[in-house]
Image (tube, rainbow, N blue to C red; front, side, top):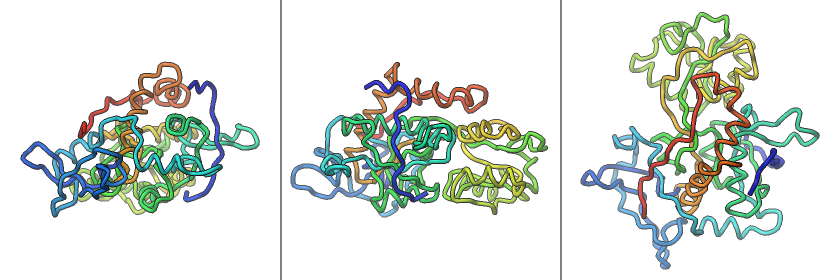
Length: 354
């Protein structure tokens, strides 16, 4: 496939793999326990396709209690495979116009997933995440445009997956151990970190004591809010920082900042750099204070889909014509190459090979 230029697909709907539902504990220091398998009679487990075996689940199902998972959540995924399974078969079995990959995305993140105001009468979705969605659709359904996009707010990403409203979410979604209890992730496709965004005229210097008595905006359900809340409780963040302003979508924080309702925004540096590109009066302050990875999120029992997406990512990284680097150069290099948020394809590591 050659995706020269910008492949476009209209937005439909509004709402704003899987051995990874629960990774529980160390077993003899060698194995991570995975969710209990559902016997299928044909050798398959759950919706994951044939041959996937699982261990019994221990009582404590919080993956964050496992030091290995907490330290490296981006490695808690399955090895690549091009084989179809139950999940992919169901997607392919959709008839007519419904035979599309249903994907939760953002429509407000500049250069990630957004409507180009200069994109003509349809103003279709474009961006780095959107390119990846088209590649996944091309591989699974043979058509890069066989996609039904659903715009989903930050705080509705996991519910949309769990309730079956989407097959996957590709929406600058950080892989972390808490989310691994609810959904499964692909291998990481982007590396970033939390960073402070504030007006250029502000006396805020970064993630430090200059945030004292400042109103900070974060998105509901975001890793930014979780990190700030945790840091404030532990004393890493100055106690007088005001974290009460949360919004459904990350872009709403930029609006609050522009209106003077908050003093700073904390979000992924990659997103913050794109927001700074939208508004020349704001800038990134200081360096990233975390290391995080974006992944494609899917249902916890969709093993075959997770493996397939991981294989697609392997090929996407290797493609020197229309792959990861070409998409990065098209959408992100202009903003990220000038900031500490610059990235490159993160090397994948897999939890299991069988």
